[in-house]
Image (cartoon, rainbow, N blue to C red; front, side, top):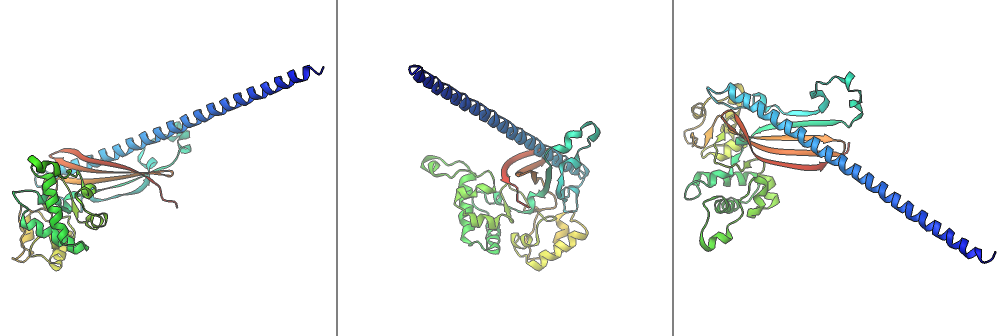
Length: 320
């Protein structure tokens, strides 16, 4: 009898160890399955959000294409057109013509909210204009200096930025200078590569943009402050008069603008226009606690809308 007690104790201990191992393995399997479900759900949500934002981009491109088709005879872009009306945040289900009687479970899913806007990229000063020619065009440098002064950025930043852009975006350097050539920034957000501080970039963001080619400023969409700083001989009073005039009737050509400004104002067809070929498209999708934003730059080439830049960012949705 006494000899069996150690055997029974060893058997009990072995059984407890086996139960512990089985429980551990079962818990690990459940955890792995749970993680797999979570990863699959996150990947599915990411894919769905990307497809929705792609659809929003395609819809915006369609709007711009129809606008180009309607203005083929006389291209004019202004803030009274359909593309300039932003889309306020709305429930995604309102855009879908679905038969809820055949999809009764659609209300059980998470609500998605979509918003967006189309902005004229040529309503801001294009930093690419500083790169053309054998040297920095004096009129373009003066324009950037006035813009910097207006937003509280030191004027010498304009000269440094112009020189850095010419090094990065100009003809490729050869010899020892090629090693010190800064990396070409693809968009405004990468101007920090050229030494522009974050504070200065945020101050300039509402007034400047970086596009692949030099572009004129659209007189129908540019702000009063920008009209007063980009062109020599302009002031805020004259710029305000232009803004009021275009609200009643958009400018059809640059000559109409020249009749409203003093003779000292230097506005010509090479630096000013009444139409645009570059547009910014912003889409935002809010899904539960996730917020996905996409920023695209589209170039209009006839009736073709070509996306030349896209950036997507994941954020946390603000708490109500």
